[in-house]
Amino acid sequence: MMMWSNFFMQEEDRRRREAAGRRRAQGQHQLTPELEGKIKLGLLLSAVGSTLAVLAVGTEFWVELNTYKTNGSAICDAAHLGLWKMCTKRLWQADVPAGRDTCGPAELPGEANCTYFKFFTTGENARIFQRTTKKEVNLAAAVIAVLGLAVMALGCLCIIMVLSKGADFLLRVGAVCFGLSGLLLLVSLEVFRYSVQALLQRVSPEPPPAPALTYEYSWSLGCGVGASLVLLLGGGCFLLLTLPPWPWGSLCPKQGHRAA
Image 1 (cartoon, rainbow, N blue to C red):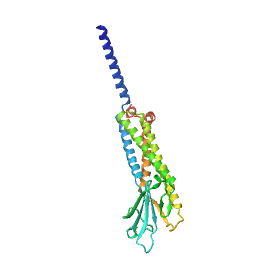
Image 2 (tube, one colour):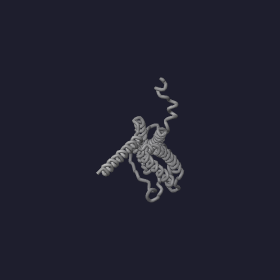
Image 3 (cartoon, rainbow, N blue to C red):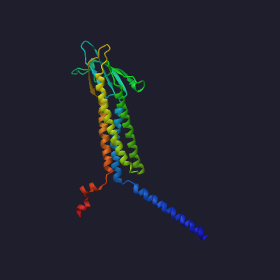
C-alpha cells in the first residue's frame, strides 16, 4: 500500500510541475497591455489600407477616356475602365460642364454599356474607341493586384493570431506581408498606367477612323495609391514593434531615471 501511495503522490507532483510549466510558458508569450494597444492601432491602420485596396481593385474607375465635344451634336462618348471591366457611356453635351472641351466626367448620367474584359476567359483583346488593349499588360496588372490582396489577407491573419494566441513571432511576418502587399499594389498601378499608354497607341486601321481621345485617372486609382501608402506605413509600424527596446530606451530615458 505504501508503494502505491508513493506512486500516486509522484504522479500528482509530476502533473503539478507540468501544469506550472505550461502556465509559465503561456505567461512568457502573453502580450503586455502597452504592446497589445500598439498592435491594435497598427491593425486599425492596416484595416483602412485593406479597405481602400479592396475598393480600388473591385471598381472600374481607374481611368477615364473622353472624346472631344463636336458642334451640332447633342451627345458625346466617354468610357471608364479598371482591371476587370470597362464601361462606355453616351452623355448629353448639355450635362457636360461648360468650360470643358471633352466629354465627361464619367459619373454623369447617361446610357452606359459595361462589359467584362474577355482576355480573362477567351483571351480576346478589347476594343475601345477603335483602339485595342494589350491583354498581356492588363493581365499582369490584374494578377499582381490579386497577389497583393492575398498577401494582405495573410498579414491580417498573422496579426489576428498575435492578438488572440499571443504568437508574437508572427508580428514580423505580418509586417513583411503588409509591406509586400503595398509594394505589389504600387507595381500593379504602374503596370496599369503602362497599359493605358499602350491602349492609346494601338489605333485600329479599320474604318471608321479612331476619334481623338484624352484620358484622366480617376478615384479608383487614387484609392489604390492611398492603400499602397497606408499598407506600407502599417507594415513599417509593425516592424518597429519587433525591434528590441534598448535603442529607444537610451534615447528616451524613463522619468524615474531622470529624477534620480
